Picture (cartoon, rainbow, N blue to C red):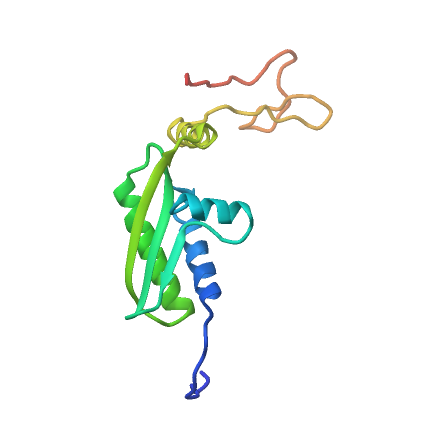
Length: 165
């Protein structure tokens, strides 16, 4: 049985909102990190006094300015739509408030060769049919014919199908 809601008031700190937004943005496809708004902010971040990438304003509703970097080769407009959707959903879900505006500033593209290599490797394994077979044995190294489960003739090996990559 659901609990009855009790009228009251909850207070959410700016830091909690920033943490929710940061988690939503970092979990979005194509975002490689946050950017600094200015040189002064970059110096403050190096000193450990500021965290980059999110500007929060509470006047006339919740307003966010996000400064992000995007992976090279990814559609920037699609990443921006994904970030907007993720931020709005997270704040609605965890805080229960609607966002007045989200402004997304893409500061640059970041080339990540390892990420591209992994994506290409995943794509190759998804598109290439794997037909390599493993020869069944009885544990002592004697081969069996897979269909009949009888010992194979001496020196015989199971045929292997290979595809070119």
